[in-house]
Length: 204
Image (cartoon, rainbow, N blue to C red; front, side):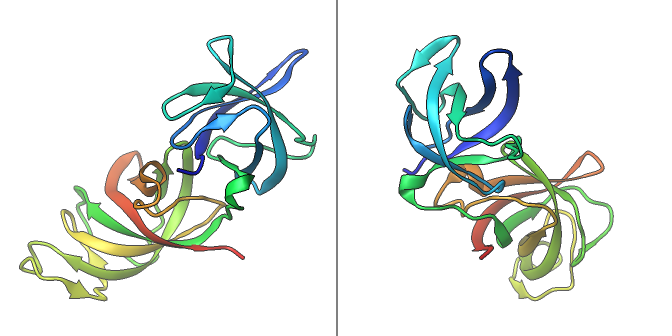
């Protein structure tokens, strides 16, 4: 599987420089690999070294939490928590414009309509996303039948909806990468939906 490594934190260490930390979700990473960062859109960087618990690793694989020294990041280029590191040999990854997802609405006193703009948590990223469309829903109110293009969602309904991130975000269809295809929707610190990404539209 292609490399996916969400960045969780970044440290600047005297005499060493920037150390980028995260856990490999899928794929493997080797020193010398050419990497890019999305959605920061940094490209043409190179893994200089991989460390785990102060030991140097040749290769990092799924589940390994590592600190990386990356060559080629300029002073004015910024890596942020929520960025995903990918191997450029697998092709370029682009930030997404919109994504559709299967969601399960959790406890919610009112109704949710298009325009609703909660915060989506996907691995180490958190970005406010606008719900732009409700494609279909089903639940008690619908008698367990799929209703197309409804105007609103209520608690405990299942639905497929479209979200538009208000800031750069990268997610992937659940079928391609489970770790980047799952997300939680939060609003005022309460869980509003659990979701799985079904499709994405990338930015050009």
